[in-house]
Image (cartoon, helix red, strand yellow):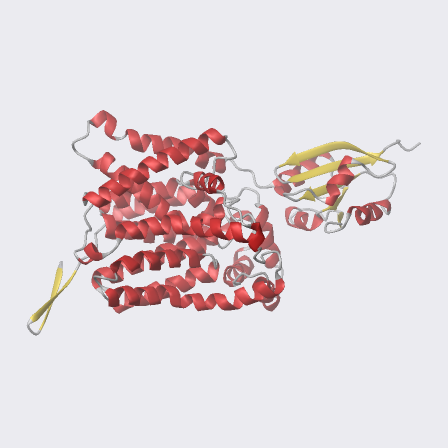
Length: 499
């Protein structure tokens, strides 16, 4: 503790929990290795959009992103980044990796300030190996900025509550702005933090209101993209007659987040196992927090609503998304990426549920690590499956099409393939996506009747071009069909060989 005398009063400022430099360096080395493993794999679906935005002029990019209801912060950063470091998969993803490493430091400091060094070390280890965290670090998308914004906000808020220094409150507001500027859905997490602080109104009303103002004032930044989105986008209009309440879908979304996305390697049995184990961990974390088995490291943090803070952080976003999905009739829980801002709270719950079991001196040594081993057994297969990822359909099929028939025309969703072929000799590409089936058939009639071509489709839904693959144009046959994830391509050859 550090004491400063002022007149007859003594102001006590809690000293931060200290970490050894060697431990921090080791943690960062392990995290960097986990985040960078196979970072050069092919692009995923939304990363092609990020690459396409780097080809725009800056003002065009800003208008495009705001019109789509997004802040241009990340895309402007990536625009400048690729002009310095070039366009490769690893280079485009490096900013996300660096921001995720920074988020790890903030997260470990937050966990130590609220729950002590042991829980912080366990939470940091889970953070390093969590599949969705690694996915975030390896995506050329704004999600790493959102993860950094939420963890930095939480850390600064806890620091301000502990020592009362105005600079930490200012950093809380600035970090909230950072999170919003990368991903507007961070508003859900800031609202969760503000909601948790309502529990402190009876004991510290002024402190709680100051913190809530710092968290919620940046919401004004969302007005511009919200207005542009309402003006330009009609598919998100609220449909009051389309209310859907699907708690099972919420449970499925949660099962793909708490220990990682299992869908690439496991079935529904994993979802049941993940939710069951997570419920047990929630129960364990609740008991320990209620009993006071994990005391707050700082005296001032005794009044901080630690339990409410963690629960709100973990579950408020998924509840908001479930309600919004029911109102607008659109799927908002279809991918774990929408819950990246809630990752910090979910990982803290896992660590809190494990920490008393792992570090309790009263438990028999052979069994004390069994709960942690179960969690690791659920997490690692998801992480390894992601490390083995080769990229999305265009990356895989582009190589397959070129290997089989080099130099053959590729029609269809050809604009995406410009990225895959930009380092090779120019490929004959014919973009015909976005057309109706009849319009696409008319385009294909203009091709030479004696030369084969590929028809490439990239859509997670049925596309008009799929009908052409199923029923080839007159005089053509589909000699070969390739599929990978959301991409498929068909090699069309003349039905009768030329004489």
